[in-house]
Each structure stands twice: as structure tokens, then as C-alpha cells.
Figure 1 (tube, rainbow, N blue to C red):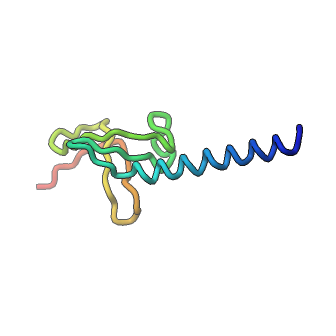
Figure 2 (cartoon, rainbow, N blue to C red):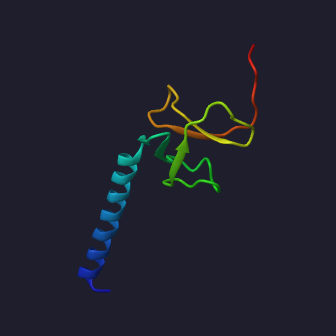
Length: 92
């Protein structure tokens, strides 16, 4: 393979990765009325949601059920976190 073509391909791949990172950063926490957009930061939700997927979130805290996927902002991590609800405890 020609050296110029190889360098060109590497530069294009690097630019695509950079653009993907910028889009991910720009879309984190974008709000549109009752919906917001966020980017999945890890592979912890695979295969349902992959790392880098853009997720549309509807704000609804009244009807959370086991099996739902929720998003929250923990104090220990700078980005929103997605998790599947596995149990609900009523604290009264």
C-alpha cells in the first residue's frame, strides 16, 4: 500500500474519532422540553445500549418500575449514569 494512502487513512480515522468525541461531549446533557439527550459513557448497558450511543431520556420520576432504564447524576462521576432498575425499595 502506498505510504501516502496509509497516512491519509490514518488521518481520516483520527479525525472521525475526534469528531465522535466532540459530538459526544456536545450532546451530553442537552435538554429539549421534557426530553434530554445524553451519550452512554461505558459499555455497562450492553447489549441494549452500547458505549457511545446517543440516548433520548424522558423526564418521568413518578412511574419508575423494575426493568426500566433510568439516568441519574451521581456525586462520584462527572457524567450522567444509565442503569436498569432491578428492585425498588419503599423507605417509609
